[in-house]
Length: 149
Image (cartoon, rainbow, N blue to C red; front, top):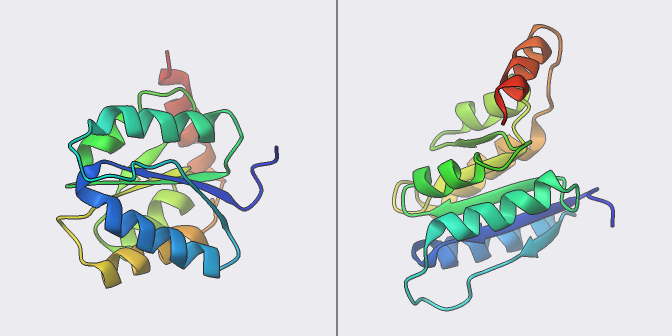
């Protein structure tokens, strides 16, 4: 299946509602939201959800990924362990735009306990509307790729 316009979304139990709101938001923009859960509020470990989403991006099944946990930090760390993933946690729109433009990030992480819903959607919009600039940034992204095991 092509990754064109497909975004995988995942979270831990702390961020289910924000993840669903983001899924609805991006669907209205013409993206296909591939929501891989969880669906119930029982405690669930963020590493497995970050990894599962990252694998769908790394495989090419999804073009991009958006992951959410309480702070956005832990799930981002798990996603970045998957070869080919460049995920940044953002709590502002400038950083969300820059991780795409300068770092060619293919995943975004957000902290549901850090930002409110409105700002989270603005962060998603900044991330999705930005494009990798290449040039001198491509050299640096290549250096990151060389670090992968």
